[in-house]
Image 1 (cartoon, rainbow, N blue to C red):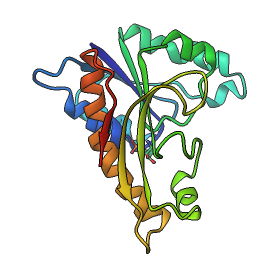
Image 2: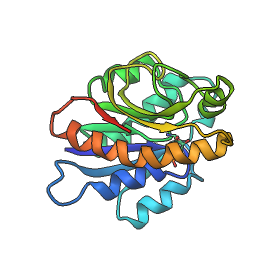
Image 3: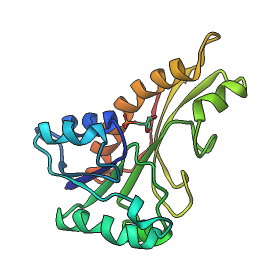
Image 4: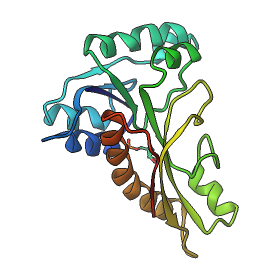
Length: 195
Ligand code: GRF
């Protein structure tokens, strides 16, 4: 299976996915694509020998369809069978999602269905949650929704800040996402539950 990974920033999740796809793993990375030419993950991907591409969303202003018409081209050219969103910060339209229905994954830093959207760690702290974590799900037309493929839980500690909590969650993301992708690429959709 060929995997395209979409990023917007540092790409730490992307790199753990790239590094995991070796040996008898049923998938290989075929593309790292970003909406942001300055995304730090692009250099990391290139250094790892993975093809990269940039489709800047800004020239398209609010025209999501026009942006996505460009965004899809390198994905199709690379022959991707699976698309992994990994810190990709653009909302995708139902048309784009439908084109990859059943073969597009996303990682979200909360225990879905709690805290869809942004600032998940601050919201979990504000709510006084004792447990938090991350989720990998199939992408559907509803933001941060879709069938759960994996979750990892972490404790919330009394002196946590959004930053310390985010760091603890990110560590689990780097364990969960590769585990889910390996199973997903082998056709196994049994949810992975860690921690
Ligand atoms: C992180 O906040 C992570 O929780 C979320 O995207 C952000 C950037 O991750 N998935 P990455 O380092 O670019 O993978």
